[in-house]
Amino acid sequence: MALPQPHSPSWSAFFEEQSSAARDERLQRFYAAETLDPDTPIANAPLVAMDFETTGLDPAQDEIISIGIVPLSLSRIFCRDSSYWVVRPTRQLDEDSIVIHGITHSEIAAAPDLERILEELLAALEGKLAVVHYHPIERNFLTNALHQRIGEGIQFPLIDTMILERRILEYQKGLLDRLLRRPSEPIRLGHCRARYHLPHYQPHHALTDALATAELLQAQIFHHFSPETPVGELWC
Image 1 (cartoon, rainbow, N blue to C red):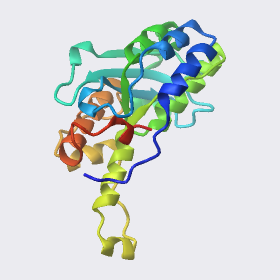
Image 2 (image 1 turned 45 degrees about the horizontal axis):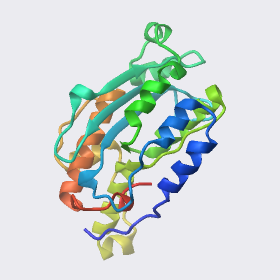
Image 3 (image 1 turned 120 degrees about the vertical axis):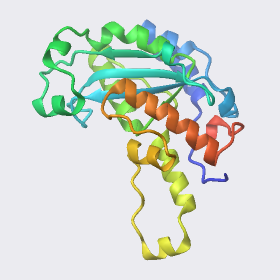
């Protein structure tokens, strides 16, 4: 499918620069890992779906409280190799957020600070192409969390299934829809999955949402792209 292509940043050059510029040894190792060439077919890319649950939606004042990681390929999802962490924020949980994500005060009290699991998290992402749904959450929350703890942030390529779905829907929209300015279809994770007849999962659990995102990417590639699609046409 010849969809409009977004700008493809030079991640290899960025990683090479950051492997020397980063001060934290964990970040140095992360950036020193081999990065994907943008011409790599998506079928050959090592993929890992990732999702965060947070105390709110503002990365300037809210924090990560859970992280889900699920490795995948276009044909398989490796649930046995998945990872899940609850991490302790620096501020007390808001009762309204507990209703959404279900993580309790007692779970938070027993959880480690994010810095304690950082090495393990980076190892799960190292050399992989991350897949998320709505990348500002994972990108902004993680880099802000690291700035608070080690004084420097982190950036890496992501495939955003929300962006892909928006591109797909815009491509499919007819001339009449554009002329009449009909509203776009919803692109939240559950709505996107429903269009591919994927099963409904209870939302707002980081590991379940990571699994849901992994399945969504597989469906999107199968229906609208090709296993040979270069990752540089998909990442941001």
